[in-house]
Length: 240
Image 1 (cartoon, helix red, strand yellow):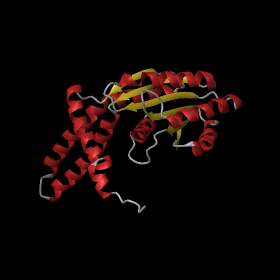
Image 2 (cartoon, rainbow, N blue to C red):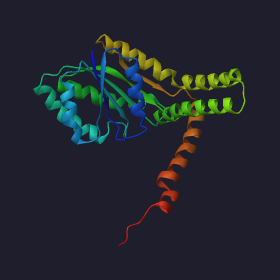
Image 3 (tube, rainbow, N blue to C red):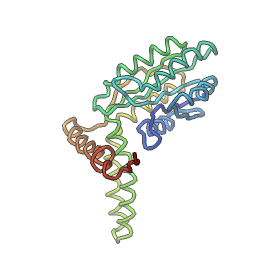
Image 4 (cartoon, rainbow, N blue to C red):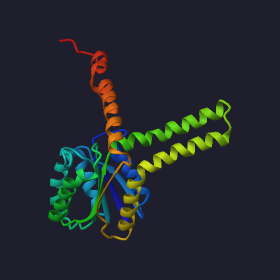
């Protein structure tokens, strides 16, 4: 079984889609090839990969309740290419948005399903994830916890006590990811058998009222350091 994972996030580093690509590959049997789709220059290479794929996983962020614009351009080329080259691969989708509700990805799933119908591909389902950015931040915290674990050992804390703290922290991360992991495992098993899994929706397992508060703080910090006053102060201005 040949699986093609297409990361359609425009981000080059630390994207949620790249994280989900990695996780889905773990739970999917067969051989795996990963490609990044960011612009038209990637189309020819990726379309060539699609010729040999049994399963194609499109992994992307949710933009305005639908697919990113560069992926819409890819679908136009892919539709003609698949028809002309008799490509009948199974298609699975992973989409994620900043909204906490996973079903916010419903329209995107229908867009991909319609694309498959016109291209001759078989739409086998997918997973719409809510709170994708939050899950990405939580994923990064794993490395922070491991660093704190090492620091505790260096500062004289017993290995047993440090391990207990680390286990609790990792269990918390796992809890937030349980819905995503369940859907990815189910989708991976279906893909390994060439079957449909249907469209599933999940989210970061965090109460909505808590998610909103944490998300507000996070985006305020991001806006200040990436698009706000500090960036304006430090940015170099070209002489006119």
